[in-house]
Length: 134
Length: 297
Image (cartoon, rainbow over all chains, first blue to last red; front, top):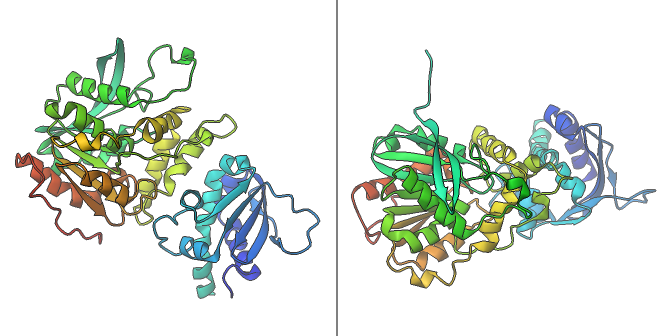
């Protein structure tokens, strides 16, 4: 399975939706954001403590009206999703501060639900172990 | 059987600039005073491990206090009418630390602080060096611009959730989960706007680049910087220490922005040689070097 491919992102979604803490933290959230991972881009929608089926943003969408975008090249995500990420690649905040990742758009909802978002991205580290175990 | 920490907490009244500050502190041990300064937007709970470590408290009187506005130290009466945002300044910080030391009779103390508590070690050493035995600046530098964010105090964002989450990426990922989330909790329980006001000191008001050249006659200064600190990077601390005559620097592997809190066992391997050196009565760091430290458990 190619890293960050639609299959990979679906695996990520299922891990997040099965995570009780993510469910609790994201229950008050209503988020729509663009997630760019190298050549892949996705529209991620979170509401009621769940991630809805994730669409590829490159396909023809009826509504791509995301609140904010999180964009980074594949190398950034490779480092961030390593079991032990290297310095500067620990989370989206510090990757942004250090110029490895771009946050754009209306960031208010991101900051309002920042613990849920950091928790969510931490769960990305579980995707490849879960693939290996399957 | 009932178990207690050995640290005891109490309040001291600190008179400073015409105001009396009822100031909370925790203390344990006897010997050379070791006054510990918390980071921006947090409080003295960050030093719970050192306050309860007999290897330290057998030789040092460890004292950790909450700055006004932090932890159990209230803001000064009338704070609601301040008419402007809380902002910590270098002048207030330096003066208050010295006033606190006097109030608790911490004579010729060792001062250890992290982040903003590390940065303030520079003016403390420069302006009050004759009253200080040694300084241990952690995650400290002469200038760290660009960290004030309006998102740190905005009623549309939960300040505690924001502050706690803002700093998580500065903690080394291999630090124990329990301690990582204690740091989060410490930040999450600070008062509205306090973190932002502290970052004003950390990032704007503290600028010691011009004064470093004057720091040729300070007490010993033992700088330490964690490699996972992506805010105050080891190179920044080293560059500062290199310009101070009586200073040394070590980079701590597998450590982030909160050495005393996030991985106390690993931190002690770097701290112990420093404390030994201080106890020996050394007044110069010329002959001091850290032994090789392994981060393996």
